[in-house]
Amino acid sequence: MMNPPSPQTETAAPRLDFETQIDRLAQAAVHCGLGLAPGQELVMTAGIEALPLARRITEHAYRAGATLVTTFYGDEASALLRYQHGSDSSFDAAAGWLYEGMAAAYKNGAARLAIAGGDPALLAQQDPEKVSRANRANSRAYRPALELITRHDINWTIVAAATPAWARAVFPELEPEAALARLWAAIFAASRVDGPDPVAAWKRHDAGLHARADRLNARRFASLHFRGPGTDLKVGLADDHVWLGGGMQAHNGRYCIPNIPTEEVFTTPHKNRVEGVVASTKPLSHMGTMIEEIAVRFEGGKIVEARAARGESVLRRLLETDDGAARLGEVALVPHSSPISAGGRLFLNTLFDENAACHIALGQAYATCVRGGDQLSQEELAARGANESLIHVDWMIGSGRMDVDGITASGAAEPLLRQGEWV
Ligand code: ZN
Ligand code: ZN
Figure 1 (cartoon, rainbow, N blue to C red):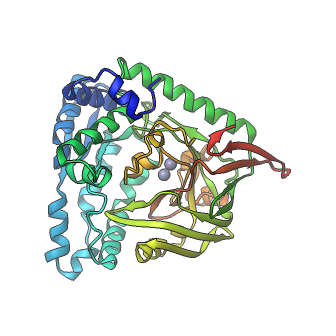
Figure 2: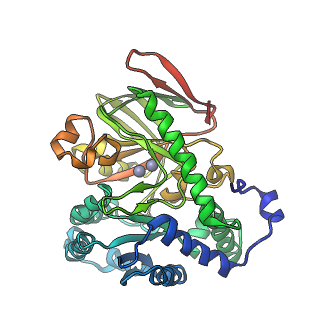
């Protein structure tokens, strides 16, 4: 298994050259993350700055037998032009036709890969009202396609590519080129492609996460109790909840690991059984805006008080998206010694930061986190406590000062994490 990225190991470890590592990341994305089948189509999304990785992934996908790789490239500068010059009605528009096309591709058996990474503060200077409207219109239009993914009808994965703006935000003290190199090195390490055999490393890591989830599933806890600075939160778990971690078999029969990197085990809370207060331990980068020092109070599963030192208006609008937006759809346990938090860096990107700390997510629950959930109707899922919303936004509540207990149906508390580490 990979060593945590610390300054010592970073300089002591023999460095693979960049081309080798980006190729290995593409290989891991296609073979470990996606589990692409010969004869399968692939739909990919990427920013234009991720082009080198997108090309490597395309190569590995065709070499794995993909029939067709279709990539949609986005551009952050163009996204900003909408805020500068778009008409007011622009912010209620979304490319529904594109998402319908994606949904049609998934129904025809296509796999889905997203390359994440971009400027965490792209929209920070824009009108939060417009940002919120645009996000909402987009979420609505995307929902039918997203459901096929969250129900795991198809194999899918997300990997990350470093970009100059993201690197500048994570390593502001470094020169642009050095910052970009450092961010790539961090991505390669966290994605476990910096060792001699990434595919074997992912098999071992995946087995470890499954073992952790199995142990939690055997306990059948009724709730979790989080205690830390600013946090005293009881999170009731959904009836028939299932802990998941690492890879899973999609309904098309393919085994995929949906997030690279991934360090979490997670399940679905009960949407009406969350009580108490919780404080975020890392800033949340949400759709190009930063929300910092979140402090909320839950009553009967719903957030009834919400504050943030920065980005509070964005947070409030987020919570008002729909009824489910102020309730929890996910709770995840990650030890503080995760190789991603061990570097001590905030990545300002959920794919990385959520794998550095225990977290909760507002909004949509994963049906696969309920026993037999993918066969259940929306009403049946809701009856078991699974939340429904247009949004799913993870934010970090864990730290080296967090204690977590599992509470059994009879009310007995069992320590799960102490000072952020598994007991
Ligand atoms: Zn999560
Ligand atoms: Zn999540």
